[in-house]
Image (cartoon, rainbow, N blue to C red; front, top):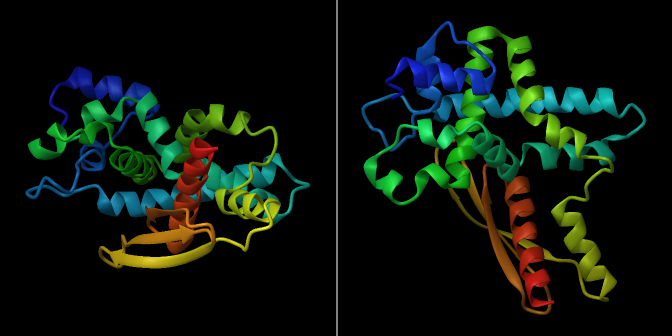
Amino acid sequence: MIRRSDDIGALERAVGHTFEDRKLLAEALTHSSIIDSASNERLEFLGDRVLGLVIAQTLVSRYPNENEGMLAPRLNDLVRRETLAQVAETLDLGAHMKMARSESQSGGRRKQSMLADAMEAIVAAVFLDGGLQAARDVILDAWRPYLDAQNTAPIDAKTALQEWAQGRGLPLPTYETLDREGPDHDPRFRVGVSLSTGERAEGVDSSKRAAQQVAATELLSILDTNA
């Protein structure tokens, strides 16, 4: 839990929102490894939807001439786990998170998955505390560098991998769902992707589609390293 008022004030200034109910902020920063406290999993679930709505609405407004097929890669790039973790790092969320000692000692405060989850939970906490406009203000301020960097629509990892294979006369990549864990409100899918030449990689995320993107990104990284 955040103990000192100066810590709370510093974090609120970094986030860009002063909480009426600071219990929401504390919950957003509590990892599930703390078994005697409400964890941030429910807030993470809500924050994912709020973030997606605000970013999608912003993209539709920014790019009135782009169709869904062009907007989707932009959205995926802005709400993916890696971007969420980067935003969390700029806010120094890791330093404020409450987690079990074992998680902290194993580098939990720097893990992308934990940082991304905490960032989504922060978005939800702001939404519940101050409403949609407050959440939108926080999101657009924190995501401004990433929004401004999208001069051209990014190619999503699955499309890039498909183009890589086609450019070499290979069959399309093959995706396979390997495992599903977690409760219904927060599932984790493990997906594998492979090429006919034998290269393969895996990805884990909260939906099959997102896990496929993670797997494709990992395989592209492997192919780039071996090039």
